[in-house]
Figure 1 (cartoon, one colour):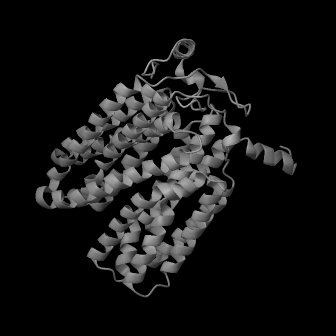
Figure 2: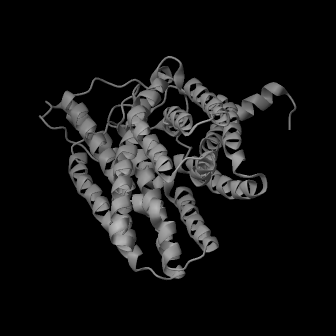
Figure 3: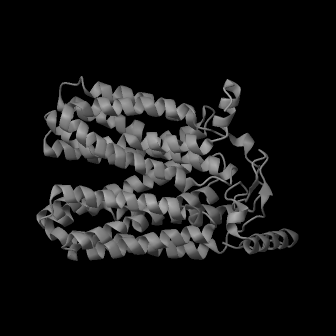
Length: 453
């Protein structure tokens, strides 16, 4: 292997998948510490259960309000990479500041500021990853995103041992360290501005309107299916303890869900992104899996049954994420993609916050049957998705082209921007799309666009 620094740098530049996988891992590593141990740290600082609940709920509300404007900064002149680095550095400062604050009120205020900072990190990471996938057909979003899940699983396990050895006081310091590392990793992330993306042709206003409606319907459907997990996330551990399952086994049950999520990312990511109908199909699969999972969970009284239902996380969550990310990539207009990622994050936060609030009351009244009460939320997502499915048949698909960046064949999504690899769509679909688009351009346009998926 050559020791020439220029050669080494070029080899690193040619592996954007490695850099983006590292970015996803760095973005999620801190969450593996935050989710299991931040409530315990807040309790150790003297916050009451009510104050802890207020702090966590406030974080969801803030994320809903700030995710879009914070993430939209990535569409500006400074670019997503610089904004992401800045957010991580501000996050590190915020976590270190927590260790010096003397009162619960000050801690709650600082946590609110940290929530603003964190609201843009995950959507900006996904935005950068999807931007590279659109320009490099050989890359697979799911196989890069799965490193975030792996990092979460690893850090949640490692932090358990660290807290047992060093005490709960290490949590904000460890989170600050994760932010600093993530900032350096983000510096190496590839970024392509608008001038490296093929320019869109003039589009019919009806097409633009149809794509916008379809995108919003998909986001709402996805957010509803995601929100159906609220009772699971909030009360599954309490429920399993109440039926006699020990904490060690409960930890395994949670780990199984994450492993199942990683497996579907690895095995089926490209299928979700093959075309618009496939992406909608993945969303439909996730809604059906979520409804089945939560209808069955109250009646699962043994570890093997719960283990099997936890495997459904691959579909109820994993398929939902793959489907909506593919749809955003296909339908979001260039120059507004980071903003759309922020809207998706805000919609998830809004509906998850409402569902979490409702789940507190439903679990108090219904106990284990509260899980089944979440099935209608997933079914509501399927109902919205049915409307989106019909609308998808009216969205025109332009023919394939070649990226100006010389990165190989890239298909055009319905906005005229690079989206997904042509070869993943199949030769028949490509020929059909070319014929439909050519005929549509050579004839007077009807009021509604005609096209395939």
